[in-house]
Length: 268
Image 1 (tube, rainbow, N blue to C red):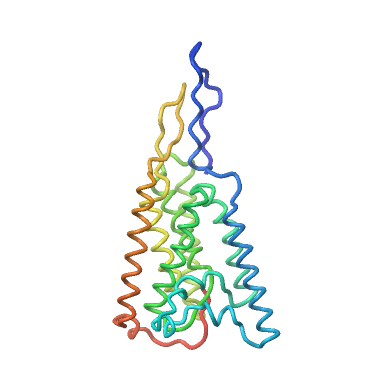
Image 2: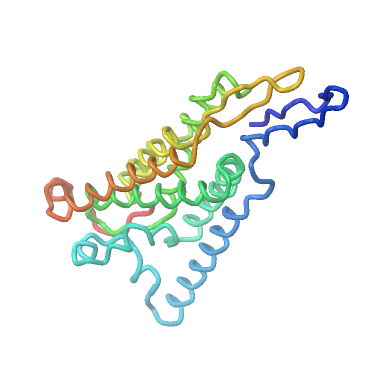
């Protein structure tokens, strides 16, 4: 998703050349946050394996996985901490590969700060949905990964006239999302968490993601982002408070008693 402003623009004689607008599709050169989250998640998984091997108990999972009965008792951090926890080598390998690919792209577009909000907000909304509709314990970063995927789809759709080949890239993202949701119906996977992450990421991306416009610059055009910091703050508050309200309602149990109990820990 590259679209750089022209680099052969000449200023008027005696007039200093205005610096080109920063490319809103390449805000940062290195996805520091993505790699930091990836490293922390790998370290937590190593700790999981060590405690499981040495103490016969996965202490990080015991303290942080999504467990509905404990959330109702007040352990609300379990609506976020599952994003750092995983159930197997394959589980963490798949999620971290997806984070490496999708997260790197999205952090370059969103910038460090807004990417952090997108990632953890998607994890939160995914775990809220899992809390409401999935009685079994669950863990995994795929709540956040689905949020990244949804936000990227929104970015391509809203800016399809200015991003080259946006339509085909959007079709690929939709295909990937649908396939993974179908795989999630095979059992042992928390599809409610995936769906909640999708909704949270899509909502935040729709109201806070880059909204591009082409403005005259020299002899051509340059891309600018019409979103403001206020847009981002409002979008975060609306999504966060809406899902928090659902979680509070869920603690009164009007939703969760409709779910069928599936034994075991589900992977997200």
